[in-house]
Amino acid sequence: MADVAIGVDVGGSAVRAVAVDRDSQIQGDTVYFPLQTRGRDEVLDCIVRAVRQAGEGHNVAAVGVGVPAFLRHERGVIEMSPNLPELTGWEIGKALREVIPQPLVLENDANAAAFGEALSGVWEGCDPFIYIAIGTGIGGGIVLNGQLLRGATGLAGEIGHLTVQPKGLKCGCGAEGCLETYASATGIVNAFLTATQDMPESDFVAKYGARNEVTALQLSELAGDGDTAAFQAFAQAGRALGVAIAQLCRIFDPAAIAFGGQVSGSWDLFWPTMWEEMVELIPVRLRENLMIQPATFAASAGAVGAAGLAWRSVQTA
Ligand SMILES: [Zn+2]
Image 1 (cartoon, helix red, strand yellow):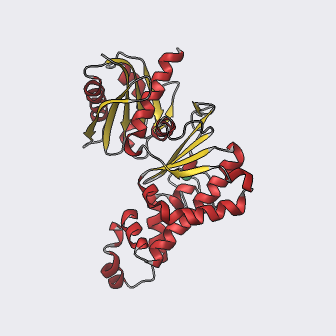
Image 2 (tube, helix red, strand yellow):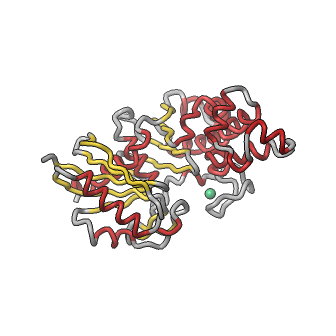
Image 3 (tube, helix red, strand yellow):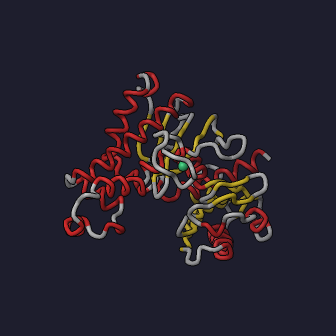
């Protein structure tokens, strides 16, 4: 029986889990449970079943759980979960400890994914390492001196909420002009809808379909086919990313920046303007050796990272 840590990634629509050995190698298959009600009972039940199934035939040393939420680590409480609103205010740490006997670590999902991606092997020796996940929103995480940077209150690394446009678009977090409002999948779709708002409705529908059904993936394909408005929406996202990354480079002088999340698949559409902005804002020295590219781990980074953090907690205890 191999010693493993189980890493669980709670997403907006599913819970996945993997067993990971001491050397960050995945043992066995990824376990996957889709969420239906997205309530606390269901999430708890899925986590417990995922831990059990992924741990079958192994000696489970610890469990790490990544959740899409702002966490109060010391109390194990979910302060806010924009994508799973029913979890807001939940003492998830207490609930899990009642049913999971092994040592338990809780982490924000993007932080866990950052740690997982850093463990993938591709980024060996890259420190500081920055991970940016561009999906419906934008998450991020920073690994510094081999450790996940949590900050004094656990809110470090919220890259999606860096200000890229003072007094800009209103963000879900309550602030204005956050990176997320310009460069997330939602931001890209909004930019496109704004740019095409004067188009007669019948022309719009004939070309793109219903306004409320436009997706970033669809725009990515259209932009690749030469659609100007779709192309511009990604170009704008790239510029916003460039501004944010230039600030990160000034503070951390990172060795590598990796991009995860569904929008990272549209890398060719946003990196030219992103890079242009970075060239304008930061000196050559900060960018000449910087590795900046899409992440490698894709969907399992969050679960692997949660397992990695769980291993850390029992090894340093
Ligand atoms: Zn924000």
